[in-house]
Image 1: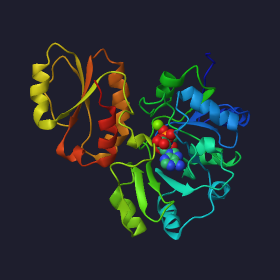
Image 2: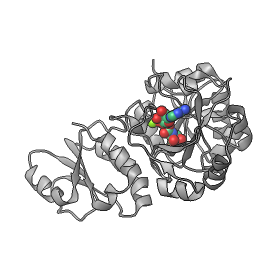
Image 3: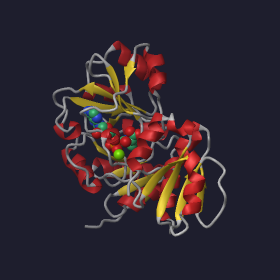
Image 4: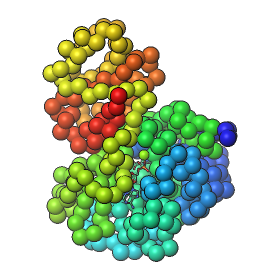
Length: 324
Ligand code: TXA
Ligand code: MG
């Protein structure tokens, strides 16, 4: 069934009010955050939460992140917060860090997918925090894309993937950070990164002043742990810098969309030039992948330079985006 998806403007008070009304009635509103757009619904409305899974075509065994507007809302979900967790919250919230806590017994198992933990994030955009704080207890907000596809970093991306399936999107322009939050599990004795992201392992270890693990494999079903995720529709191949010139000159039969960092010879392909600066690279990566997916190219090529290869959050996304 197709429904009309309203495009609302984050800078207009009546539009914010409209978004609130839709949410309070149990509707879904995609919201901008500093990382990617999330598909918001009132977290304590089971029906609304279920409809988020439906719109995304997301399996029910994938838990959702609860987004809170302030620390009072956090109290609804968790109580047992360690001193280290508090230190990390103080340094990183609001910001691109999701924390996994032991959940209170009343927390819906739909949100936690049957786990005894719950994921919480306090987004950085002030207007969104104000919106969330005005709603009861917080919003669930998985990335506002169809399951396994690329996360959206603009309202247009949201419409492209979920237009006709959700009640509204609140347009707040392009996301500043552009990659999903780091997920850090603070529910046990050892602190573990479950998904690499904008806050690096080193930064978090420096803040916490304790070692932080980043297992390459863990049993929790998080996006960063699945082989296929964050995928554009076109095939995507990773090519190392030293091989990319040869690859491009050999592949004359195929049209390529090339995301590159090094200078490359200009020919018939479509080129997207990424910055050597990590923040700029992160901000533009999904923008370019979305654009590359819209070109007439047969395949997307992403150059992996030695420095890019050391960026865990970027490589984590690229390795999962690659497919035939
Ligand atoms: O930056 C972000 O985190 C964005 C914005 C919208 O906030 N949200 C986002 O949500 O990326 P989503 O649902 O696409 O990814 C959240 C990941 C999922 O892979 C999920 O499995 C994991 O968080 N997760 C949620 N609750 C969890 C829990 N209790 N334990 C372990 N992983 C959890
Ligand atoms: Mg996602």
